[in-house]
Length: 216
Image (cartoon, rainbow, N blue to C red; front, side, top):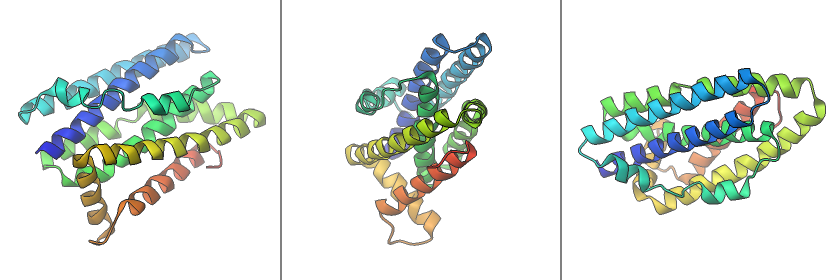
């Protein structure tokens, strides 16, 4: 049960940081239409966070404590990936959240059915990603220089995001156990290690960048 609570705490904290990022992006959005969309997506992140926190309480955990156990998790990542433009900030969310979501998708196989269903539903609420795809693909498709810069930025982001996931499982044993158990179930093998996990995360990132028409 402690492993499950740890994963839920991480997901809730990720939604909290998503809210903060989207709210900040809305404040500097290039148009009022973009601003409105981002504000609504920020509200969605809060709703997802509250659903996860409620499940922690249902399982007998301390919701705030589980979330706050991850306080500062993204500080180094954010310090090392300061976007230079609004478009880079949008891509940062798309890549960073995508890697974190893919990590959690591997880990969910070790959860009870009710919790697993909730987590998958939360992770599948991808309106934020869909909006990012539309905006970034349109912008990059009409500007070759921007496309080249975003492709380069995406490669830097994924390297840092994978490093963050690596440090996360070093510091949190429960997450490490869940993600390795999920990896073994997915691979259909018992001899699966972290290298398999990170190969999957990298492959998913490549597909994600392909949706934007950008080289990974």
